[in-house]
Amino acid sequence: MKDTTLILLAAGSSSRFDLPVKKQWIYLDGQPLWVQVTEAFERAAAFGRIVVTAEPGERKYMARFADHTFVAGGASRQESLANALAEVETPWVLVSDIARCCLDPEMLKRILEHKGEAECIAPALRAVDTVYYAKSPVNRDEIRLIQTPQLSRTETLRRALKEAKEFTDESSAIHALGEPVLLVEGSERAHKLTRREDLKRLDCLKPPARESFTGFGLDIHAFEAGKTMKLGGVTIDAPMGFKAHSDGDVAIHALIDALLGAAGMGDIGEHFPDTDPRWKGADSMQLLEAVLQRIRGVGLEPRHADLTILAQTPRLGGYKERIRRTLAQALDLSPARVNIKATTAEKMGFVGRKEGVTVHAVATLEIYDWSHAL
Image (cartoon, rainbow, N blue to C red):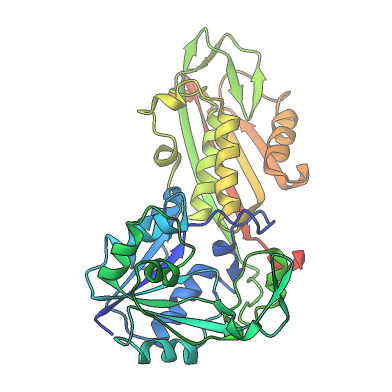
């Protein structure tokens, strides 16, 4: 199998899935679905290389889970596949959609046994119901429902994808070239996860583990006269704001780092670098919303946050409750799950000299329990 590269397509937006998490990121026990699918293929066969396509903003994050080659996906399945093929050096390539998440090893064996007998070997199911086309019945014995994975000769597939037409799979692209395609018996287990209701049909999907992850964040900003001060999304009555590329909301920045830390997503500077003009003067609440969207998209959700604000000035006792409720609303949590503490530095250090403010934050995430949506 060293002559075959495995490509797994995992860059879809899951627009039809109707859950806050993308289907490739639902957790099965303690791992994302795409990780478990990859490991199932690894157990079934020894591939020369494994290439996984990812939504561009998730490529680096995916690489934290496994030691494979990760490439940015495109606007379509075909474009994603073309990007992955650029990394392939073997004469054969096996392509599968992560959505075909219940791998049948016997079906895979049938595909691989026919390597070399055609330019593409694809699994297919026979139609068992009456089939109509354009309001008229057709002979169902001639109907085949094509599945993945599909084994293709690499150079033939590259040629096929250069055609202007958009294809839904490898077999149709190679058939359009006039090259031979061999269909082998598919598997009922290889049902595609497309919509939420498909979760009930797939016997390989284990419920998610009840795991939580904790992250710590810290941020510091010096004062700058003449700016509006924002802390935790609340405007503070003060003659100065914070010196920063964005609006300088030091509390939200610390919270963002805590959330990113819990998710294993790096830090705020990686996501919103101060060298990028897009974030100049940015509303930190919008940055928080963007981070929460990314976190929820990969199968995690906030459960608790605790912030400590160190400020000699301004006095924040009258603002703590507003900050707590503002952040709780942003996190979609009960105010009881968010805690805000404020203290001085006893006149020590830069905070004690009234030069700025520092905030420490701790946040807890849990795996999204998709089983409750069934």
